[in-house]
Image (cartoon, rainbow, N blue to C red; front, side, top):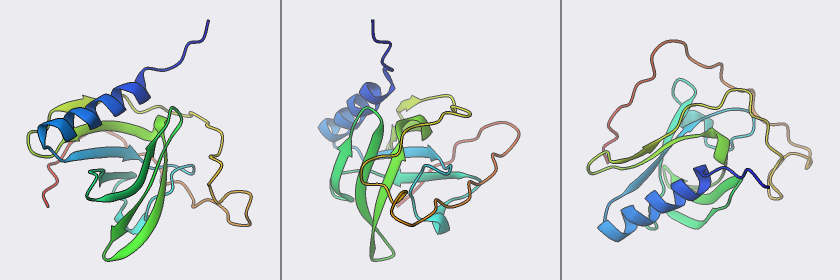
Length: 140
């Protein structure tokens, strides 16, 4: 029997719910060496991303990876996020969604489109912060 995680299915369900309700889905991500996001926007080892259809291009939410391109300060960037790094998905307008415990030490296989193996080393992981987790409202 396969013990496949429900996490990617729940992420896709909340994303679809946000779209159906006209809400803006945001993804909270704990950044590590397998996460490809713009480092200059990472705060305390975390990043919160708008993953609405209007904010992303070629959004793919698989069982192991979330991949898409998005603009940051007018520059298009390719993002690759392991499902294990997702700590939450929620609607910006009301904060409703799902949050997941941070998965410590989870190793995932590199995605086919990742830069590893193409001569580029992954960025150094940001050390995890200690203390209580906190949420903050992200406004546009």
